[in-house]
Image (cartoon, rainbow, N blue to C red; front, side, top):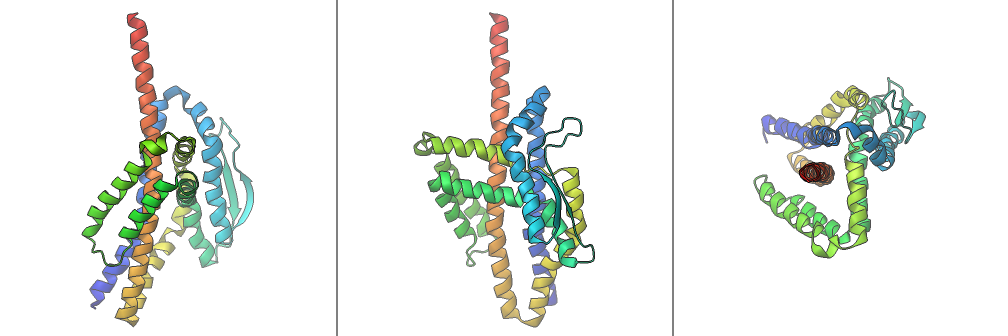
Length: 278
């Protein structure tokens, strides 16, 4: 194996792990903007109504990674709306800037709401809509198979998530109360995964360290042993694909939130037109 191939594997791992979560964050931010643009003048009221569930999950995402990376939580408000400042909740933390592990943790703490929130969505799917969870798990397993080439993934993503959607919106599930609870909670959580400017600024502090680690691990292993490199990169890629599937779940529910709001807005516009004609 040439050094160029080893170097490329490091770049790919950075894209799979770091690039995926950054892309997810960008997509969630765009959907969040569309959501509140559709809501219009009632944005703050809707933010509070949906935030009673979504914001605590968001802040717990920060807090969880504070604990994982040894940061001290100074103050935490899971849900404390303040119209003047625009904050709905927050987590204040401190750490040792000389500690590389804690500095790296800044990235995960910043993007914590996306990672933690996606995990909560997967858990809710498992608890409330088990057939849909099983369908998604099947799709994830096929994508995570080491035998599949990169070109196969697009076909597998289409068929895997197509099957997931068919199961999730099947008549059998839609008629159950668990499905509606899942839909409500999923939308409230996903739309509040959006990262604030403070979250992004915090994540930037540990970004370079995280990139370096995901890039250097396959490169160092590749220099030592080509066989070990294959096993390590295969394991990392498979794990990354599983994680990206969970991120996709968050994007799906955030998209559903936007669709619901636009449909409600369209319905209101149509009703107003009918009343005016009458």
